[in-house]
Length: 68
Image (cartoon, one colour):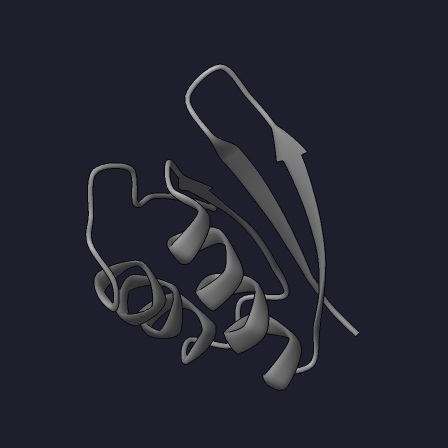
């Protein structure tokens, strides 16, 4: 599953991520285009027991979240 949170201001990227995490999805990707969203989504995912790997892209970052 992939969430496109580009262009969204915080806390919207975290809220969109939470909607998917609440469905017990074991892995997902989140596309973000600003450092605040990258840091906040990563912090939230780690708190929810997901491992996070961030890849730099042409538009910002692709965060790969995988449930521990």
